[in-house]
Length: 277
Figure (cartoon, rainbow, N blue to C red):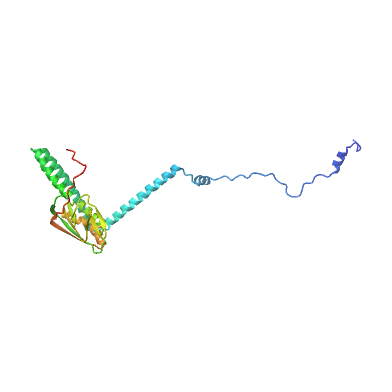
């Protein structure tokens, strides 16, 4: 083919220089970054944090916390009691043990008495007469407990002096409860008979017993076994020590004969009737 036969566009393309790439680095295609592989420890940490707590797990955790707190308080309480006994003198420990033995003996005596009454009823030739005798005896005992009849017998007297006005109704109530726990059968304070329904309250600078205002010094007359009543008041941390910490004076004396003659009127129930009628 001759030069004359070449087309104009072919001749123009041959005369143009080749394309020259621009200066600088050749751009590379973008590659996506891949995350490094995690170790076993890192996967474990990612699984545990942040924690994913369900409602049920939260409730169980709160219950376990409450249980643990209660056990801790109980252990601390028992430790305090043990420390108090551990720090007591040998004479005080012996006195506490004697008091526990005496309370156990009183319960055994009461059990024996009830069994004896049952046997007397079963073996008596005149069961009706024996039943009437026991009924009269029970009525007398209930009258003493209810405060409707006078009583006498061995016991103690206790006088509480309160010149500072620090003795409150709750302290006298603690003394009454301690005496009852020690086996007191009849109690009167400043001429007021103490019964099962007795209540005490603070009244100005004095104390009110069943609505009757009494003033210091407070005189207790108590019928019961003196060997049980007097030690019960003098146990470590008991009634006497508590009152003395309040700057009150306490004098406890045993006596072979105590007369409790303050009476309470017998109340007729409005609605309750005997089931035997």
